[in-house]
Amino acid sequence: MLSQSLKDKMIAVCEAKIALKGPNVGLSFYAFFANKNETPELLMEAATWWIMTHKLDHFEKAVKILAMVKD
Image 1 (spheres, rainbow, N blue to C red):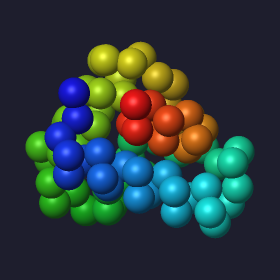
Image 2 (image 1 turned 45 degrees about the vertical axis):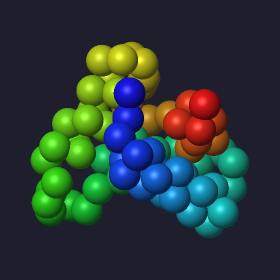
Image 3 (image 1 turned 120 degrees about the horizontal axis):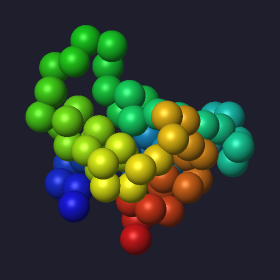
């Protein structure tokens, strides 16, 4: 289960990447964070959701992640 703040961030990032680079753009869970990690709790939440819960590959299509998060 994702927190609402992480869900909102993931949706915004996915939509922006798709708008900029098209529906085939891929991303990793690191795409939701700055290079300097200022929110380690959110990073761990995203990593757990991505790796442990859904067993996703390192890079996935943004449209796939967007659909998963919106469900």
